[in-house]
Image 1: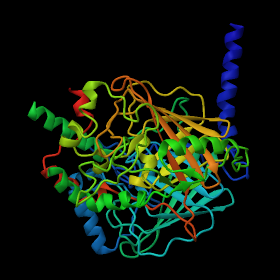
Image 2: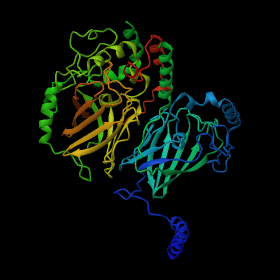
Image 3: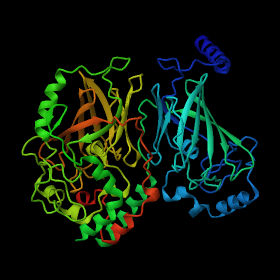
Image 4: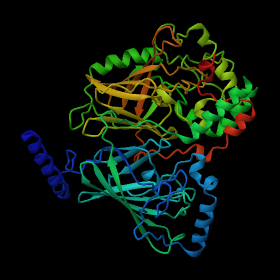
Length: 256
Length: 301
C-alpha cells in the first residue's frame, strides 16, 4: 500500500515536472566545433505532403491542420485558377505520381525518413523517398551562375547563431508543393531555417518566394522528429522502380 | 543486332559515363603498373609505407572527390582484343584486362548461373537495370564516376555520394547487426570499421536487382560484399571489393582498381543527375523487346 502510494507520488511528480523540464531550452547535441549537431534520422508527422493547408480527411488522406502561416497562399489570380485545376486533376497530374523527385520543400515533409550528415563544410541530406540527395554547402561558396534547373535546387547554408539557414534556388517548374496542386515556377527561391528545439526536434521554417506565381513571400513551419528506434536505418523507397517492378511482374505472368 | 540498336538509344545516356571513365590507361598510377592485378599488389605494398592525412579525430581522411581508374563498365572479366564488340561501330567495348584479381580472373559461377551472366540470358533478353535509372549497386557504383566521400567529425558514419543517378552509400561505423534478410535494398545496407589505415565496408540486404557490369554479370539477394578502401598516396585510393553469394558462385571473388582524387582547378562539385525525370531512352529500348530485369532470370529459373 505504502509502496503503491509512493509510486503514485513519484509518478505524479514526473507528470508535473516533465512539461516544466521540456519547456526550458533542453540542451541540444553539438558538433566538435560547437555548432548544433543536426545529424540523425528525421521524419515529419504532419500530412503536409497531401495538403499543406487546412483540410478535412479524404479517402487515403489524413485530415490535417495546415503548415502555412495564416493558412492562405498568396497566389496571383491566374495561379489560383491553375492551383484549382491541379487539385481537380491531382490523381494523374501530380508529378509525384510519375515517380519523379518531389522537389523542395516537399521532399522534407514526405511521410518517409531522411538522414542528415554534417561536416564543417557540408550538410548532406539523404532521403529514403526517391533516394533523393541534397548537398548543402556550408563552406561560404555562392550559388553557381544560372540558369540551372535542378529538381532539388542548389542549396547554400550558413549558421545564424544556432539556426542553420539554407538558401535554395535553381529549380524546375515541374514539381508541386503537395498532392493538392499547390505549385511554383522555376523562379522559386526558398530560405529554410533549421532550429533544434531539443535533442530530438528540429523546427523547420521555410519562406517561399516566387514572383511569377505569388504576390508576396509566404511561410511554412513544421516540426521534424528524430526517429528513436535503436535499429532504425535509412532504407529505400523509389516509386519509379516499384512501378517498374510491378510492370515486370505483369509481363512475366503474361508470358508464362 | 538488337543489342546494337539498343546501344544507339543508350548512347545519349551512357556516352558520358563510359567515355568519362578511362579514355586511356596510363602506364603507371601512383608509381604502380596499371594492369589490375599488378597494380593491386604494388599499390597495397606502397600503402604500407604511406601515412594518410588524418581527420581531426585521428581517422584516415578519405574526404574529397574521386574518379575511378583501371576500370571499364563492360565486363569485370575484362575485354580481350578479339571480343565481338571490341570493334563495334556504335559503341566499341574498350579492350581491357580483368578487374577481377583472383583465381582465373573469371567470376566463379555455378554452371547454371554462368549461362545467365557473362553475356548470357541477362544480356540477350533484359534491359541493363542501370539504364532504367536505378543504381549501379555494389561494386559498379565505385566505377561510375565521380563520387564524393564525407566523414562527419562525429565518426559515426561515412557517406559516399555518387553523382550517378544521385546514389548514396550510407556507411554506419557501428557494430549494430545488419537488418534481417527480408529487408532488401538497391545498394545494400552497410556498416564499416577501420582496420589500420583501411576503411572496411561490409554490405548485405541487397535486393539482387542490379548487374555488376554491362555484360549482365550478377548476384542475388543472398550476396554480401566486403569493400576495402586504402590510401596509397594523398591522391590515390586502392579500392577492392570481395563479393560472395552461395546462390550463384562457388567461392568469393575480388575486384580491384584505383580511385584518384579530382583536382579540377577551381574545385569540383557533384551535379544533380536526375534520371527518370528526363529519360527518353527506356521506351525505345523496351520497344526492341528487352524485358525489365528485377532478378527475374534467377528468381524464376
